[in-house]
Amino acid sequence: MSDRTLTVSSLARVEGEGALHLVIADGAVQTAALQIYEPPRFFESFLRGRQHTEVADITSRICGICPVAYQTSAWAAVEDACGVAPDTAVGALRRLLYCGEWISSHALHIYLLHAPDFLGYPDAIALARDHRAAVSRGLMLKKAGNAILETVGGRAIHPVNPRVGGFHRAPTAAELARLAEQLRPALDAALETVRWVAGFDFPDLELDHELLAAYDPAGYAIERADHIATGSGARFAPAEFLDHVVEHQVPHSTALHATLDGGRYLTGPLARYSISSALLSPVAQQAAAAAGLGATCRNPFRSVVVRAVEIVQALDEALRIIDGYERPAAPGIEVPPRAGVGHGVSEAPRGLLYHRYELDADGLIRQATIIPPTSQNQAAIEHDLHRIASANLHLDDAALTHLCEQTIRNYDPCISCSTHFLRLTVERR
Amino acid sequence: MTTRVTVIGIGNEFRHDDGVGPAVIAELQRLALADVTLVATDGEPTRLLDAWEGVELAVVIDAVPGAEPGRVHRLDGDAAAPGGGGTHGLGLADALRLAEVLDRAPQRLVLYAVEAADVEVGPGLSAEVGRAVPVVARAVLSELATAFS
Image (cartoon, rainbow over all chains, first blue to last red; front, side, top):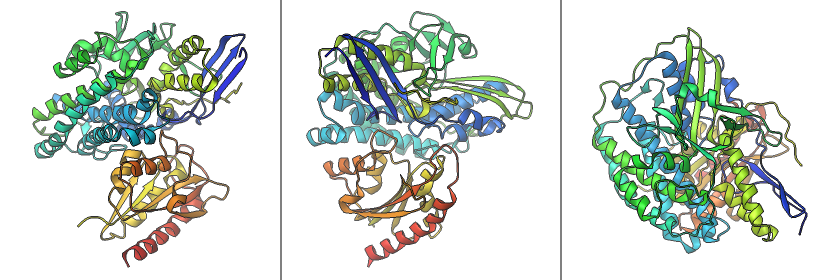
């Protein structure tokens, strides 16, 4: 069993299309590569020459799972470039909208994509046969998230109501009160979800990657960043992102790899939780403690628990925002163009999403840079794969392959949006 | 009154021919059909379950890879849930099987699959697939006429 090559040519239960390539020679793991072979995405070049007010509609098309994340980082960057900021009522609606995306995305991942790994089922269909109530609960949570997206965003996929400067229309208090009626039982389902996933078995693995997440002293960072924080205590402004994070291409992927101050790092639920767990709402903190989470979490398999806690956080937060909602006099502000550069950061369900736009005096986009979380995490995922595979070489090919797939799913990689504008031929080894 | 029939167009309008499903839905929307729910979706499974739960007939329009762009296939019953997923975690077939396990499947499902020429990023259908849109829309209408008769 010394020389083995394991290839999973099409990964199931991850968003998009990717492949895993593992080479084992002389009893050691030689290569652990997450290959991404979806055609490169041309959104950064699409954006060049477009008007600054168009970014929300264009970037929402990058991903069907996290369109709000793309819209949010986009308008944050454009508003930064133009030197404007909508008022707090609009800010609250944006946070509410983003909560919907977290709930929807996390519920999909936990119940339909990730839980089958822990409970020994090949897929969600087999899981549903034996755990019908649990899967139904997951679908109910997903629907609650979609309801927020529909009420605030105008529709569940590629929301049309948000715009640079705010929204086209603010929901009425009555519309949000109806939404709250649907969210209250969902909060109970979310707490039940935390209890459910806390009972899974988790392999022992503590990762030592540097962590990176948006930070906002006002609350668990979702739709905005006061600054960006690392697990080791460094902090920097969104405008300094590219001074710290550098992208480079690797031969086996059309997504760029990224380094933070020269090293591998991780963004996403584990980073957010470890950096901001003290800012979770009381109900989310209680749920986390009852699930056995400490102040930080560095076991990637336990990311499923952190996601469940984040659903609680998002639902609690959504109800809080609705409770204090007063319909703003204007749904948004005008954003007159000016020449400049803007940076936008938000916490997509999968991790930190950075946008940078350079505008001319008419508001036309001269240059766009989009750095999605999955490409930032790719080096860390491959590092984990290397460690996990090395520690489990005694397993047969099928079991080892499954363990590696589960390792990848720990990060809920969204491969559709991590593929990047690059003319590159994919190398297969 | 409960909806008897739902027509679901699956696809992404920003991936050229992948948008054929939503294009057929847009065509049907202009007819203001009574008692028919029209849904354009990215095919995410929970949205499919919500869209077709409790209906007597779900007509689904989706793009498929093929050598003859614009060619239309009609699949009924078990044949309407072929193996292999879309670009997301679960495909149409998986969504249908999940719905069956949870008793949330439509009583009957008919799939119109249109062979796609180009699913790269960008708006607009290829000429061949664009010509298939009214063809599929007419086929769906006769499907509805039969179901209501």
